Length: 581
Image 1 (spheres, helix red, strand yellow):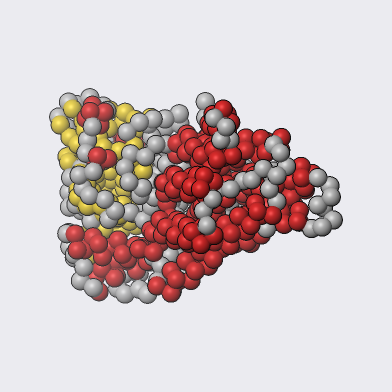
Image 2 (cartoon, rainbow, N blue to C red):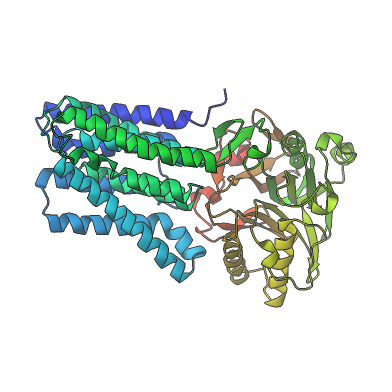
């Protein structure tokens, strides 16, 4: 059964609700109910986060992984505020410190890779002011309107905010917003039945950093419209309508409901704008392990973002038969109908076969499937759904090839680069009209003009810096090879997802990976090891997400370099599952 995109978030929200409710029950049993409120929200969110994203296996590397430690720190801050009634100066210091840490953790990939110093400062100042303002506003609201107003407004804001981020294209962040709503729901329901003057100290401290972090990541890394982000920020202040003199006479519970309604109206406008501004996906979808999106039966131009090109790359220690790398793309070609291409190295020279038609309509298909001489240590495969260029033609079909320094380079790209015509070209010129080929020619020209050698770490770090700079112009997943090494770069915003799996073949038997809609057969020599890279996982286990903004260099079926982690981290070392897969 294919899980819908909302299901992980709903499951996480239910788990968060149960954990939060149990924590509140324990607190009331010990007579400390309201000091347990921050703990209930924090523990509920942590449980739901683990259900949606999974438990951490090491230090946070991607922005979404920082939400868990942010939630734990926020929970500790809220508990301290609720238990000890922190002085105003200490609370301000806590807000500033927590906000700085939150922004530094979530925006670190951009600060290190793509943002210029002025842009970094501008973003940090703007987002920092917004985060501190929302936190301060919620704290002040709790002081002015004790009781259910603040919890109800936070629950409504989290729920509608989750829908807004979801509509903007981020299923993971939307799911985590639903988790936060689930953690807040028992608090809101309990406060509606509590004495009207019950204090809610610590709730803003436990909630605001997580809520703001989700919004920041949606704004920076996903496609949350800035107008929607601004409306969500304004929604944190909509509840002040409850402080007007005319409403103070209607009773605290009705005030709480009116405040929640005002918050819902403002947040609902943000959701409506996100729905209008974001492409609608007329498809069924599920989530890959790293939160990437997998789409089926997408239709129309509005589904273009979901149906974009599929990539697959392979690096093996010894030659491997080609049929594992093309038959699964025959199935993908029904969704990506503008062309397919396959590049491989029978020796030092590059062979490329590509056509601007579906695989099932290609005259080359039967030949490649039955031709036994198609064996290589490196493959680059691509299926295209055009976003730039005219009618499908061979010149615009990936992969692209150029010679430089006595080596034939092969390049395939997933994504769209804006304003690519401004990238300068030297002796390498595009034949077609795609942004991808233009970027390839520009990149190879930069390699030549700077005398960069892509054979050692110095050149690989230069390549990572260059790709990160190009990434600023749009969405960029790249497979690049010189026949010896396969360079794999994953988009800084996590576009489409990119995954790898370590494989070792033993004996002459065919090894297979498959999911519900494709099968991959590996046929190698007696003992062979390698790494398969794909847009989405092709089997239930053994796949690892390539980190956002990460460049991995593969050579001889092993990882030679990573821009983000050491070569000997567990995910780069074969496990028993990999050895016998």
